[in-house]
Image 1 (spheres, rainbow, N blue to C red):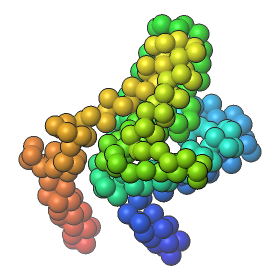
Image 2: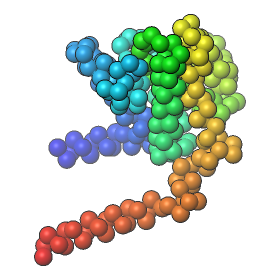
Image 3: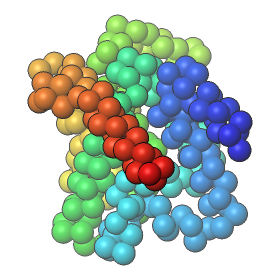
Image 4: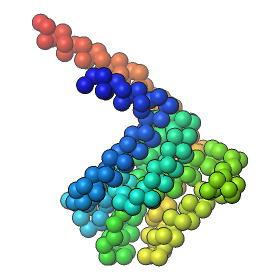
Length: 233
């Protein structure tokens, strides 16, 4: 068991992208599980009028994917831009960013569907947080060009606009406010750019407020050591 744990840890941290790899693994595992046991899907997807029974779905809805080609392309895109962004920001800042993007987007869509639309929809899939991830990635690699479908050269910033437009119009058909809510995660990006509070990283933001990960870890280890000494006594 220890060997297996070491192998998994090595795989996750090999390219300094543990968060991205972890999400891809979870996405793939749950995709297979949904096709083996369909009721599991309703425990991860966000349904506004059953949210109070399953509050964790406000954070788990990106893992709810059923369409094979959409899921495969989303996981590949997450591997490319998510991994690149995580290497630039570090796993901690990137993890906080993903948490906030998922929470803000899910909450915005939940409120619009409950109090404006008043009819049930399902909120699910990697593409919702991927819109903000693409926007953040394009802000760092603005001048980079990619070959769309291996043929058409396109700059990173234009790719971010296209991604945001596709997400917006896919939900705009239901209600214009839902379209706005679907791209609300982009607002989180500006907390991590320019003069935003997390622009220099989440660790730096904590350090400026007198919190140190090293100090917290040392206190935790000292407390653990004391408990062991008490047991020996």
